[in-house]
Length: 261
Image (cartoon, rainbow, N blue to C red; front, side, top):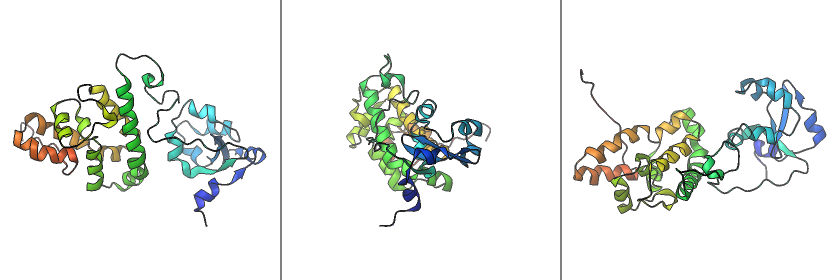
């Protein structure tokens, strides 16, 4: 079996002595969670500047990395991985949607702090939305963002079937209507409990993708137009057009003339 080039490089076992050879400007390797990354070229575009990477070249920077970054960053730059440290334990398996213990990467309420605003239902919703984002959106986000591609019908319908379109409009009667269509609220949150903090979490989890064009294509226009159907449309419009919007079968945009047009 011939491994792809990136996979073959990531499978290479690297000794401490070899790692320490790569610690000069233009030749920088560092370790995070046992994986070795070649950041030689990336240093020139690192948001924090090249100097900090040059300072830590040839070292294990796991603790320092997580003080400033989310785990997602490693996924984005997986192509920089050149191997794994000799003697490093096998990477821990993480379930999709898992809430992490990384400082500042989560709402404090999800890491044990008391909050008057969040409860277990918010945590469940966050995990459910995050799992969808990680399994359905992350694999295609970067390519779609760079290509400027419009979401296909299948993806829009997945968003609808997962309840992500309905909850993007916040609490209201439309959630009961969505339930009658067989559409869930992620995390099995009770409709009576659903509030604007649940909606906010939905937007935050999708925003973690970090690709503004792709994120906007998933419902920015839909989110400012679909509510008009449910707030101001007739019963017939809500039953026909509204149901198609909630299921992702149809997409919408807001069209308002200026007063002087």
